[in-house]
Length: 65
Image (cartoon, rainbow, N blue to C red; front, side, top):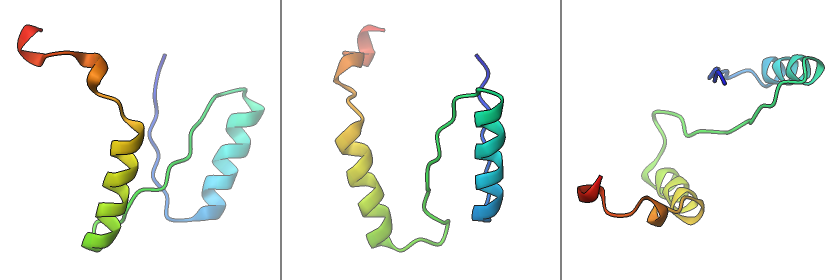
């Protein structure tokens, strides 16, 4: 598998890329990320989302790796 990460501020470009991916039968995931100058409140919101959906308990104790 190969992963390509694209960043765009233009929503129309994102829609075009999505359409191309669908035509080529390529799976994709669209994710909004905070801008570098995001407020502390925005960052806290994203951290809450990450903590809610990312379960790191499956990785066990790193010292045993």
